[in-house]
Length: 138
View (cartoon, rainbow, N blue to C red):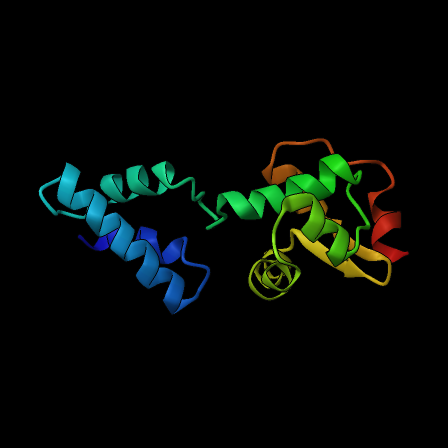
């Protein structure tokens, strides 16, 4: 139904390729669990199972942000170091994940490296450091 499709669109990062991928995964889930009917509830169940949250963040997105926050005290951290710490390719982080994280305000790029923003801390329900603003303008 339309509410299920809207839920997919909401979490698709405004990217048709992502929307199509999510639709296929939700469709597969609906075929097994709901006689093929895609409702909002079935969509939410499927996306929850896939660990895709209401902003469209996937486990790797959260890993990148949590790594910056927990291993590097919120940043700044360079792309090479971040790639090594997450076991993800540098180009993949820079071309696939980083643009969306910046678009939604979770990540800022500074001359010294990437810094997690207050928005990211709030979304992950973590307390932001007192010197966060200083990190963003350094």
